[in-house]
Image (cartoon, rainbow, N blue to C red; front, top):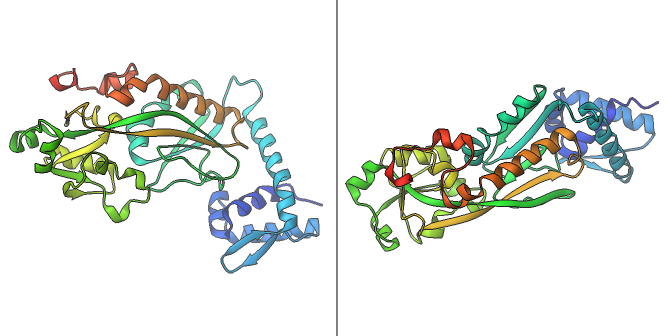
Length: 315
């Protein structure tokens, strides 16, 4: 007789391919994962995984079981969320890059949580892309299009990037009057060998050979260094415009642009709590489209609170 509690263990091992990552996701030890998968195989009298030095690979029997196990998971998740839609319960993990997460998403998602006291948002960041197929996150918001089986991916908007500097740096080094003047200025940029997503090499979109004097793998650290006078920095509008330490330079003539992609695994797309977060993200990006592309003050109250109204360069 099958122990239905073994099905989630089977699913996680199928997604992760190794005992340790599956155990971490399930919050049990790896020996328990191995034991429960073995018990499921014994109950079904079928071998579900090939054990290899580099991990676990589904057998033909395992591949046949997988869609049925995923269907069970979908139904269980929908049941836990309830059918009325009045109350959303449980966690939703949203994955993005550090800059988008800190400067754009974090101020917006609490409004949704305030309407649903039992909803938990987990906002996770990484310099690399998350794998939704392996359930590293439920939703991805990125400027790089995710790829993977059974993903629902759509472009929901774009954001622009502009040059910013501290008033002190510009006073000491002069304010560029045109793009040609950038050859005589210092810049802040990413650490080249730490860039895992080529699309963040956006400074090269506006300056062919920048004189970079400070590098960091963190967008926040780059902004702080520029605010301290290290040089010019190219930042997304949602980061540069809301930082009162910085003023825009050569805006709007010197700019770059990146798309915004939202992705969710098709197994989770109809789960009410996931659907609610997806809708919130889509509405935020659509409502802030002018700000994201032009750097103008947003209609969003989060931006109106943080916008530096005293700076003449931001009026």
